[in-house]
Picture 1: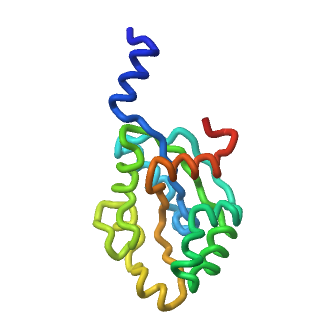
Picture 2 (picture 1 turned 135 degrees about the vertical axis):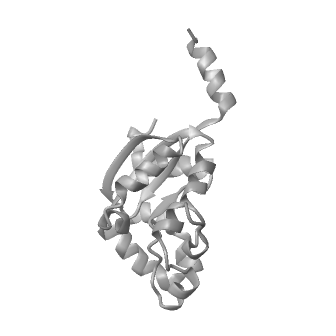
Picture 3 (picture 1 turned 180 degrees about the vertical axis):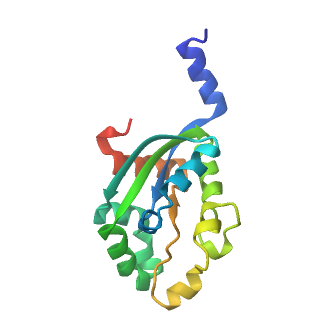
Length: 164
C-alpha cells in the first residue's frame, strides 16, 4: 500500500495540476455540453467540479478584459453575450492539465484550429479577423486557462471559497 507521502511524491513527479475550463453560452444553446465534457474525460483529464452560472461583469473582465484595449469594437457585444447567458465552469485536473486542455481546445482563432480539437470541430467558419471587421465576437465554444498562474486566478474567481 502506498503511503500519503509516497503518493504526494508520485503526483509531483507526474506533474498533476488543476486548470480551468469554461463552456460558453453557444455550446449550451447547441446542446454540446456533454460532448465537450466527454472529450475532456476521454483525454484522460478529470472534471473535479462543475458549476452552471451566469458570469458577473468582474469575472468577464478577468477573463476577457484585455479585449477592451486590443479589440474594443467587440468588447461590449462580447460582454453582453457572455454575462447575459449561462456558462458552465469546470475545475479540471490531471497530468500537465493546463497544456493538455489547451491542446484539446485548439487554436485561439477557430479558423486556425485543427480538426479533432474542440474549436476545430465545433467553432467552424469563425475567423477573428472577419468577425472583428463586422464588430462581432467569435462564438468559439470553449475557454481554457493559458497557464498555471492564470488557472489558479480563474479557479479562485469562479469557485471562490469552494476552490481548494
